[in-house]
Length: 441
Image 1: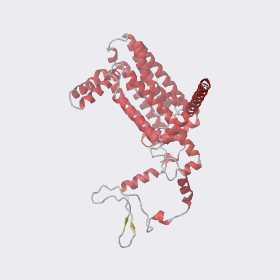
Image 2: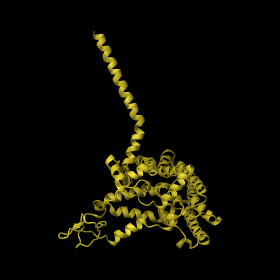
Image 3: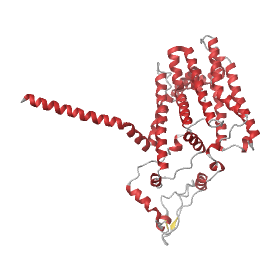
Image 4: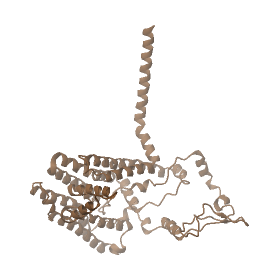
């Protein structure tokens, strides 16, 4: 009797364990789909969490904590790589919604989809028309997000010699990726962000699942209702005013006249009207084919300028490696040598001037009126990126460093500002120690 009960208990236990194991296996198999569904339905929350974690790693670079710099940068790199995966999920979801008439129709009452940016149109065209472009651009993003971590690990394991080998290797890989992208786009200038940004395919508006009642409401939109379209008295009600005058209070709803009962609509301000019109105006760039938003570099002068711009980081890193090797990777005297810094800055400035000269010769209007908005934005971004030369190499060691150090010293011992001074000291350590901490490409 006891043996029979024990046998039944064992069978029940085994059956329970088997059922639990099967359930866990099923959940584990469906975990990627569940996670993808959650990310797709909560893009705003996911972006906020990523931003919060990223800002936290920025505030704690790791210099004040013994051997914590690699841990801090590992977290930052993981967040950046995870954002690439989230971008892939959100982009796939946006593509499914755009290609499905039912889902697109169901989302009409939610929000009006904004006009896609020129950057989104251009990068989406190349990433969808060429799978190799999408793969190479993704590899380039992965290299940019993890380069500082690789440099830290190499320095910790093999010293300065191994660090510069890794730096030159990574710069060579990124140059190769950019040259491939230049070839795939038929010799068009490269954008600093070769893939669409998240806000282009995952707008920040709240996304909610469409219910049956909402679907029914969408199906009934073909019926014209004057009361719902023009208000109670048949008077259109424009958006609420955003006027800043104190004498005019913002109304939560249109005002009903006491005697006549007519609805008095609120008048939009010029800022509201201008913002609405600018969001819907069609510019010449909007009607251009996506691939024509950037001019092709058909001349040898233009192609040379772009190749020099792409090769500049590799040449600068190789010169720094050679200089460090000459001094035996010891001390800081080799960091104060001006030759690599002057050559690197000269290459970037020369490529910029050569590109402008090429545009003046090929494009009517040159850089003033002949460029598209996307080209002007990229040219402006490259100009701003040149400011990073003040934070690297000989210029930083001989000039900028003493000002950064003096600023951090002034903040010490002062309430609240002392914490800011500590963060500046952390970044002073990173800027003076690691090459990729001030890299602009």
